[in-house]
Image (cartoon, one colour):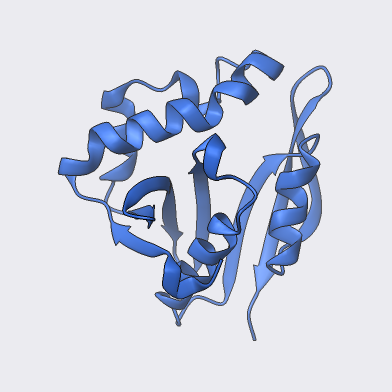
Length: 159
């Protein structure tokens, strides 16, 4: 997907239902696979989603392709670092380059940020490949969510 084919739209409260629905659909498979009720965004209430998207240190974005909302993400500003959080793309739009295109666009909105971080489930090789294609590198830090499931930390440093 070319970056110009994807629109990245800043979150406002009017998009809450859309973001909530995208998160539920996008994270459902991982919820079933790992049965992780503590950290999977699938399990978040609408109120929690709104609170996370409207925190003072957070910018939320929706992704639009073919005149439909197809994904969303939160960018959490931690001083001179930005953290990519809860990136979600609807299942029927996955593996089309949407997440790559969206993250490239979003990173360009923060030219002052030289360090980006995120974590993802280490057992989800597709997710790991996506972030590695974008220049993120494993930090070597992992934390176990439960038996057989770990979150792997990634960092991207921009010169």
